[in-house]
Length: 561
Image (cartoon, rainbow, N blue to C red; front, side, top):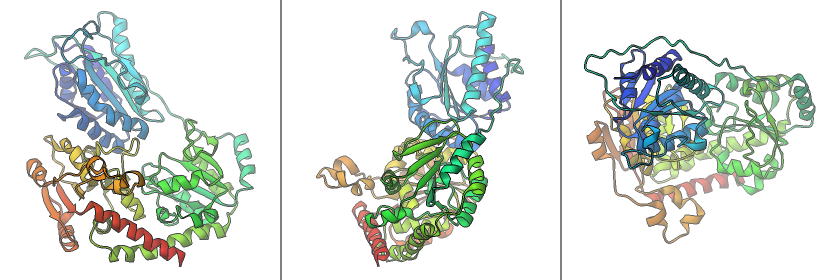
């Protein structure tokens, strides 16, 4: 017999606009599984591996900007959600996590599949809720309805994020053969109506007085989704006010007037003094460029961060103001009230970028075949109207080195782990018909191979694997690169390629080892197909490190001439 409060929970999810649920098999969660699977307005999918399931839900919620439900059984199943939940928390992606549990009297009594599940995700969710374990009283039924309302509202409210509801369930779990599910229209629904936050007139007067002394303004947007409104304002600030806009690839705000090749020159000591701003204004989440972070930490300037909830983010150790408002409203005010900035400062940044843009193509063309020049060729072929997922470690860094992209860039920089890149890209394919490209290293790819262990088609998925048979990034970090244990304990060399995985999961597959093979393969890589495709680029880790250092040296020489 399925208890009505579980059906009411699912009906409330649908009523509040949730359309997707990712389920993982189990018995304790059967009432939840059946209710979501049978609800006519919710598209339920089943993913066996809970770790992959959670990252797939993350990839969907990133695109939908709306909560996706996760359902799993009791015990260690919930713990496998943790990496994706941590990523969602720091990336501010909405989730509703439903974990089935044993009744409280059976916790820590050597009963099967039982752990301490209340508040198991700690500070990595916005809030944890404990669902009633019985519904004999009307107040308990009201409590259950209140919990699901509050959880969904909280997940969507700024800043968005994951919420957890732990649900103790008693046997019997399964309905009778002819039992009908009745999804009643919720009779207890409450919603939050968000308000945009604006600074007061008094605050704006103080800011305007301070801006009179600012002549070298730098704006650095952090990771966020594309926003055409903000992009237009930033382009105006750059073209009309000489404001320097420095944009990493994950900001999705690389306009025609932004600096996007900064990784090649902000770390050069002789240039630092001329590049220092009077004030840096930031908004969004993290940036990739370590050189830019170090430059801003050493710049000895004021830092204002725009954060709607007023939460301080002192990434550059110089925070002086938190602007508790909507970024669009403040930047629009700034474009109308900022005096023109020092054109010489603006030109210094743009001249350096232009010189890098002139020297980078020839430096890559002169390099031996390796993942850096190969990726440069791949990026030229990716359709503009597509989604580009980047795995952590070298994939996202290479793309940042190569500058402006026209595609939407998605990367799990909340915790910056390699553990769910495949699954996140798979989740993205469930939300769109445009091409979805994942660029990943071999370690990240093979770590998350269960992303493809399901029964759903994804013909728009394209995967480019940079396989150097090791964790090549460690050759570029001074500490591990100088250790005799580098190859065995840091790079973790492996001999795999993706051929057998492609056969097992039904991918079209090609392996390339030189530029000619790469060019030939790229001609048809984005042609429509019924199957997803893998392009594996095999290179040497040691040679890749040499190529990167060689390209960097040529650019620095060009800047010094």
